[in-house]
Image (cartoon, rainbow, N blue to C red; front, side, top):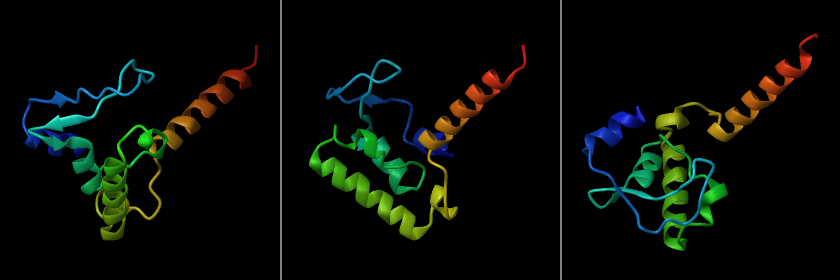
Length: 109
């Protein structure tokens, strides 16, 4: 669903020049489409979390807007907030990693 919403903005993406840090993939950036913060729009529409782990890297204004957008989406019960208790992707990845490790170590020789 999120890809459809991003696609409606067009195919040109401008990565912000305020590259703050390197992540596991090797880079991190804010994405703007025609001057619009794509991450903020996804949060507003309920298709993304305001991920607290990386929030400190953003400006105070961005932190406030992302947090407020998530709160509004939750209150409106739109997007992933339709579910009373949606599973954040970082929790899903942690569970998957633990299950893979358990499977590997539970094999009999």
